[in-house]
Length: 183
Image 1 (cartoon, rainbow, N blue to C red):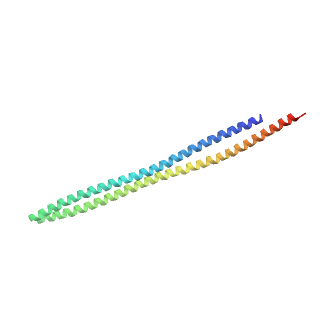
Image 2: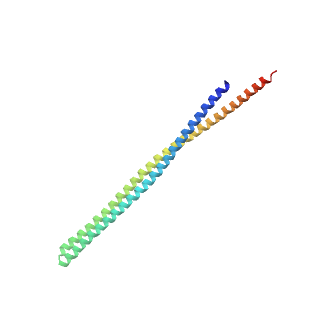
Image 3: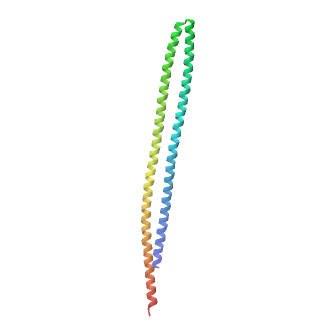
């Protein structure tokens, strides 16, 4: 009967250890998934930035082409007016061209500033997301380390219980030997 009590304790310790190991494995799986999520987020952000840059470059290229066509048209109109002797109109056209150049330069500057702000905001959101995931990672690692410590304690308890059971088995054997050796 004395042995039975230790066997139950040993089984309970084994169950606790098994449950703790399952808990540790679940936390490690959560950790692995978090790391994968962080990597996917990083790749997604890089792809988003690349696509935004390509789109912005294409928009700038198209606007420059349009501005060049408009400028060519105005220059041709100015040349035609000069040929016909319309000096006043040619001067107004020169002013229009200068105003057009100024507006075009201003628009390009505004687009570049807006794009820089967009990139900055996107990077800030990405950094905040990564920081949050890193905090989750740190918390999960602390939980896993705590579980590992408890698992080690359970393993020590199991070793002690196993030693007690072995000693008890030896005592039972010794008692049995003594009782069989009696005359």
